[in-house]
Image (cartoon, rainbow, N blue to C red; front, side, top):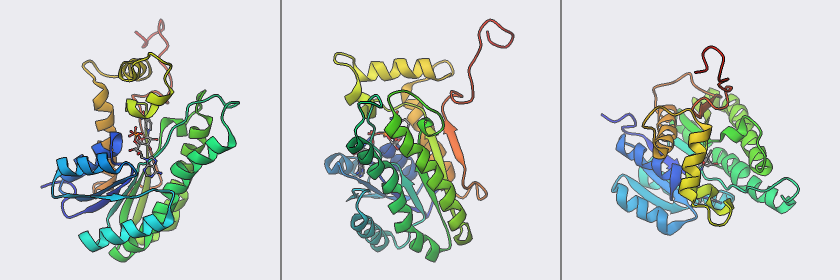
Length: 266
Ligand SMILES: NC(=O)c1ccc[n+]([C@@H]2O[C@H](COP(=O)([O-])OP(=O)(O)OC[C@H]3O[C@@H](n4cnc5c(N)ncnc54)[C@H](O)[C@@H]3O)[C@@H](O)[C@H]2O)c1
């Protein structure tokens, strides 16, 4: 029996990358899943691959009316809503001096306002159903600092804050709220910001190799799957006391560094 047997879920930004991996895994584990995105064609293609357990709905996470309509449609199709994964996000890589107020606000709208509206939209149906699980896909850029991502990092730090505050407010309704913080893994997101001539996949693989401490035989795809599996665990009923927490999936990168040449570092 699947770990999400009988559950229903809404996943945002599910037309590709991490969101698509989460939706596929949820369906494999027995859930009925509504995938949503603004890339409707690729979203529908993923749904066709998954089969009967999945449906697709256009949902721009910045739009409160689209959230209401999506939740209403999900309830009409599935009868209840158990899980929300706030996964949709945008990335801009620029120095702080080059980042305009418009750039910052664009990311705030998708990465911060979007999940905020999502939590508001699902609270009543989850409350009515006696509980639920909300997983916010954050980033290691929400637990540390890095050059080039000041706008993105500010939205991901904010999302961790929203996670904790929402978890406190919704605990009495049996709704858990957690954050999953991945390291770089899906090359499509950062591809537009690579210098000309740099092949996105090779650059992402080199980056992962440099950043993570992967076991031998590790493949880039494994990281996205690790993230999806962590989201699955938090979405399931296997961890009823896990709430208001950050689950960092980064090969140990944000915990510290390995000092070569002294004991334990070889
Ligand atoms: N790619 C990485 O290396 C990486 C690293 C750490 C964290 N993350 C986080 O993982 C999550 C998934 O990212 P990904 O790597 O799959 O990126 P991705 O760019 O492949 O997927 C993000 C999806 O969000 C959708 N989206 C963008 N704006 C939207 C909007 N207004 N409404 C609805 N959907 C919208 C996009 O169309 C896209 O399909 C994001 O929250 C991201 O911040 C990614």
